[in-house]
Length: 219
Image (cartoon, rainbow, N blue to C red; front, top):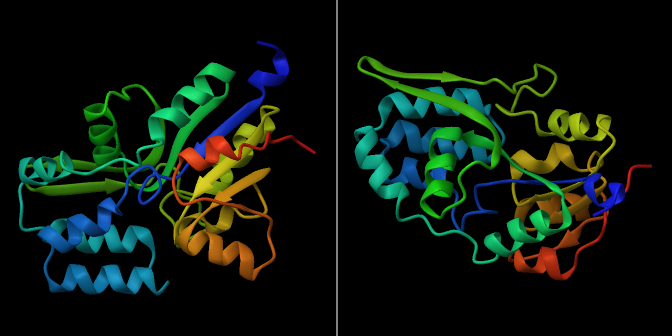
């Protein structure tokens, strides 16, 4: 393995990319009330921020943490995720999950499928007897709509001298367009890239990322 192989980071969205569903929205639909569902729809229309959506919804969930975790144990992964992780390991690439969701459910789902120890950048939730506490360690006021400022994390890897490939599908990924060195996109993220004429490699399943791999380079 040479130095060139090591100078690559693969950063991947979670909800709807690693998983086959948007986990946050699925939790809202299963356990949230009408106020929560309205907040979800407002976020999807770009009317409210992720922190506001999470702070509106999670205190209103009509389920204990254990009930929600039982549901999380049914969430399916994209069948190509394991192949992608091993592809990165074999080549010596850094791999991390970047999410505007919650580390709590990301790590639980990954652990269930045997992916302990992956690097995760996400929002935090702490379940306490008197309610939940939410925090946003990767928030940036310059990107107020997101809990996790994904472009900042991309740039962090670039400052370490790495070319960055980013894989995403949704609204919380659009700010990465034009920042990462190579983009793999589907869903609303792909629509955004096409609308703004930003080069992106389309995919529908993660196996296609490996099959259509393009080595990212810093310029």
